[in-house]
Length: 119
Image 1 (cartoon, rainbow, N blue to C red):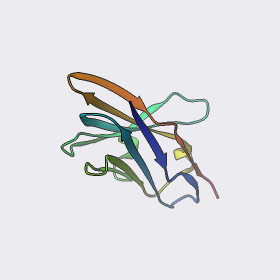
Image 2: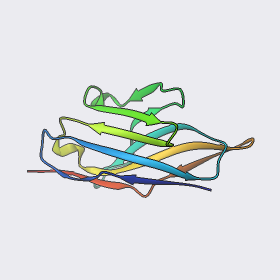
Image 3: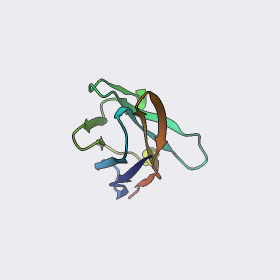
């Protein structure tokens, strides 16, 4: 089984920055796509950004130019650098990954980390 552990959330003022990390641990053959989602109070979970094992990235339109997803394959870790944060970015941020064990593919979620943007 694979576990994802997020870190880096917290309280930040509008216009500030935060960097989230998500480390995968456990037994697996490979980690494939990794993603960040977020869920604001009273809203549905939405995709923030994704990155393939080769480093190709994709972003939700509202995050383009402010958020950057990256990964360190040697550490099985994905990052989300968030700049120019706005109060509407307040949400629980979840890490998600696809992984492979031999010829089987699985999906796993982290427990989430809270980001609060407020003055």
